[in-house]
Image (cartoon, rainbow over all chains, first blue to last red; front, side, top):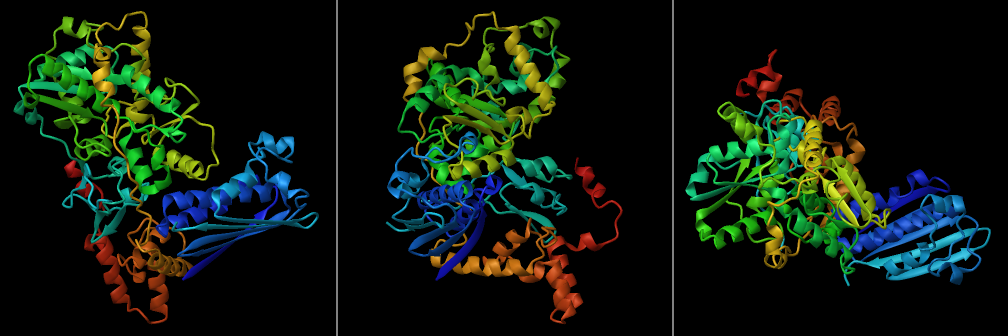
Length: 140
Length: 459
């Protein structure tokens, strides 16, 4: 038994950031997933969503749910990350002042996603885009 | 353990309900359906907010209360009164006059709920300062909101402040004080005059507490009538008393109004009223889209308790009057309130036990089964019209789809699918007519110019 969802994200459209996480949240509640697990998934997904909106041109989110884990794949076409190690540091941010003014871009995104996932993998190519693979286990 | 049955203060009178579906359309947790021409409550989903009570055109939804004569089961009778009661009446009827009338009605003492605010404020501030508590701390003041979070936002349950609401702390104080005066516990009857249904539910089945110290609940609208009726018998001197020593005079009085808590606690606090506004905010909070807030005051009713479903006075005027009452007394010393003498006794008793989530959103306990049901419900959504007309007796197409997969409704309840099935001759028109009669009752289909008026006789 498995379920698959897909969402398309447009870069720069902050008004809709959070839509995918809200829908996934509702789904996980209906599936009787532990609230603590839901919270980790939703926080990771929301941060990922905002990353795409803030930095990329457009992107896709793939979500696979089975009774053991929740898999998220966030794939964007964008500028890519030149130095992943640096991007994974708390507080490091390349966000423009305008983006920061809107309350985003505090440099918490990627570290926070990692903190909330059980498995975390990031691939990025400058000038092409970034791929983020996240897994959160349901029963620990 | 999640218990299955909850005490609700709201009941639907089957003999009065005409199944008009007004209540179903406003319920914030989709806890109502129409079946057999009557409103039906899904008890696990109800949070006792009372929105249904507000819109019912036939007064079929009643809020249970204790019979007024029950106060005489006790030798020493205390009326526990929220400050908004005094805000119900015009300016010339002072707080002291209202208290005098309550004494005439049979109480031995009148105490304002907000008596314990001075102490609670200290406790809230140290609770917020405690780094081990999840932020934002969500106030436990409004019982409808505590229940809303339990059923709809299970991951935020850990943010609920585990401190007793003022009503419970004041009751503890009253009992202790009276016992010291030599009155035994079973002789003391504390009766709370309630502005809403949620407080009744909280007293009859407390969350995080074993039992309430309150002996009974009397609805504010009943007291409103009794006070106005007795007013004519009150002497001019009694009416004229501006402030008695046992009436509160400080900013505690505005605690139950919007921003009453948020404006008086330390840290970055936010006040939100109105259950739909709160649902919208909590959705964002749950995604951690909102951060750095220390304290959240959330009240289910517009204008908080001033807009309680059992209040009679206009809520905006009530708010104005209470602010005036604070303003008028701002130079007086609050010599009547002795609660801080009991600080140590109360401090050790203000905490409440763990509050558990009881999500009502799950389609099944078993995740694999829930997934099957969800797939089926998603498939059903492709066929339903998506206009949320409510003709099936459920508040939305999504609610119908979820009812169907849980075996509580059938696909033929949808009037659009009935039409499709009739066209492809899968359903006989007579049969589809019977289905609609079963949902809405036979009366709905009869010619009657007074479908609503007929039942107004119950007013």
